[in-house]
Length: 291
Image (cartoon, rainbow, N blue to C red; front, side, top):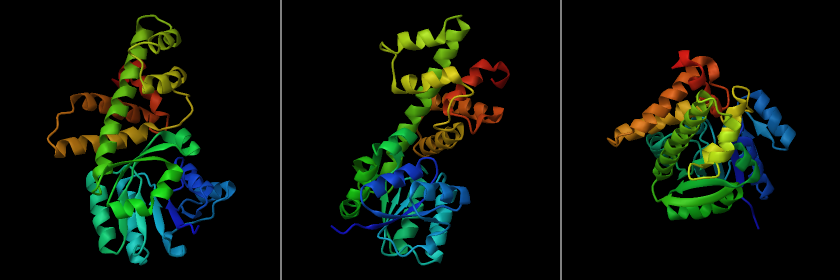
């Protein structure tokens, strides 16, 4: 069976394991990573990487896993300038919000590319196992063309037929993630304020109706904060809660709980915790001067 050639843009903490999952599925993958250190990590993992898309032979599929909407805009600028967009199916997997992916999708389509909107959820651990949740949208033909690539990275769930539908579902996902992390932090900080052993409380309430994925996953790291291993940075939720707030405002949706959670991530960021694990949002409750 002939396998598509893949150009994978963005070999960061989650992008590299995603690219490796595609390699394990038998695809020919070339990485695009502007940072030399990132290219070296990719090479050590067995993936050839170059600084720009212009240095890669025309690929059948271009996967994009950059961090921000501005970075996506720069990627599309460079691809169009180098005449490297036409003929490929672009899978945009970054969390950039509905408006950004629609705008860049139109630019790519005008340049002769097909576009699939496929933001992911699951973090580094699930990316390494190749079982991310993928919120996928696009035309039936485009989705069929890249289904085997998507399957290599996890479990694609088709959520719509238009570019932007996937990002809209991801916005809802990130709303809940942010709120649940902040709620877990507040609850464990309350346990500490009540003079309880938070580790004991985490074990007890984690067995009952108050259990949640974020409590079980982030709770133990909150007990290690601010020195918890970094699996997802505070800065990611500063960005993503901003995307949720923007999408909500555009839809005239009331999001008071999201607003409260966002304020905690912004406080953590202002306290110098931007590159710490997102579980360190609990420090905004411990450090009364931050609140």
